[in-house]
Amino acid sequence: MATSTASTETRSAQLQELARKHLWMHFTRMGGYDDEHPIPIIERGEGPYVWDVEGNRYLDGLSGLFCSNIGHGRTEIGEAMARQVAELDFTTNWSYAHPRAIELAARIAELAPGDLNHVFFTSGGSEAVESALKLARQYFRLQGKGQKHKVIAREIAYHGTSMGALSATGLTPLRAPFEPFAPGGCHVPNTNEYRWPEDRDPLWAADKIAERIEFEGPETVAAVILEPVQNAGGCFTPQEGYFQRVREICDEYDVLLISDEVICAWGRIGYYFGCERYGYQPDLITTAKGITSAYAPMGALIASDKVFEPFSEGTNSFVHGFTFAGHPVAAAAALANLDIFEREDICGHVREREAEFRQMLEGLRDIPIVGDVRGAGFFHAIELVKDQETKETFNDEESEWLLRGFLSGELYRRGLICRADDRGDPVVQLSPPLICDTEQFEEIEGVLRPVLEEAWQKVQARG
Image (cartoon, rainbow, N blue to C red):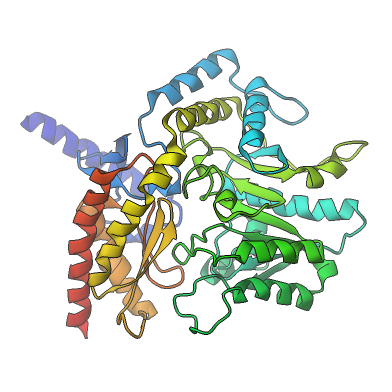
């Protein structure tokens, strides 16, 4: 046993050294790691849990990054991928097709609402958004409306990291290091009503979209891009009628409505597509993450008959693509993933268990640091405050100390992976695998409650 323990420690130390020397992690302060602050190294997963190289178990309360929807370790996905490798490891979708891409596109079209019948594959979410923005521009150019190039997005919203997608992303710290980038990004208020005046019109945020289109000039605006539930800032849900009003605005000004469902599709909020939950029909859907439950990288842009029509005949083509988009092995993983969704009624499970998950989180409101609880399905956030009555938030220095100095590390140390972040106001986000149930909800509460109580005590001690 001692030899095994020593071997584990040696291997862990070797991986730590190699990671610090060679692995450049994403959105990560690489200078923050040393002997006292090791890199978290996750080695294996099963169901809703993952284990690190030292054998410690964690509840994956973030589903990897909002994407491990059916949980970890589903070997049937790997078997489907292996069968595909044996049949055809790779061919491109540039002027060629293969059976798995065709089958997957047809299946997605069948599941997508309305006339969203045309699937353009990508390798991930940012690529899907980039594709949607380029498609909107070319769509209008083919109609002789080449001035229509601008995109309306919401403040604090995250739509990806590529240079085009950054023009829509509404987070200044993510944009500033890379300016200038593709022109045309315009931003409007989001739907976070936590601090709205009580007498504000519920559709105020929707009407701001119309005002911005008028200000920019309708002849210059190509698209509005919105998430069904906005991720950045902490799971902002729409007001009743919000998306119906946005749809009316887009129709009035001849603007395409893009539903960015990189997170919200594939059961995350209880439906295959988030727009179904809120009852609106977009012109385009961008998606990724849960399309394969993260067993392989894949994304997609789903277009309506109207948007596809100019590209359907003659010499026109969407002059855009990615080498690995629609990869046969990724497509096989996606098809196997959707088989599991159907067989186990994953979306129905989320709808059935959502109230219990939400009730558990609402129960934390007796802790003074908990200001708001919001979200939908298995996609929720807790906003942290200094004062529940006044809704006073934390300044930048306080957020740094609270989130990165205490909460992130302590939640992880106690066995819960989630996101403690301040893109907007300080929040703790929870997005567990869609197979979770009462047992996991109780585990989440068993970690969150004492850690948030301790956080409040530390806030008080600091004055």
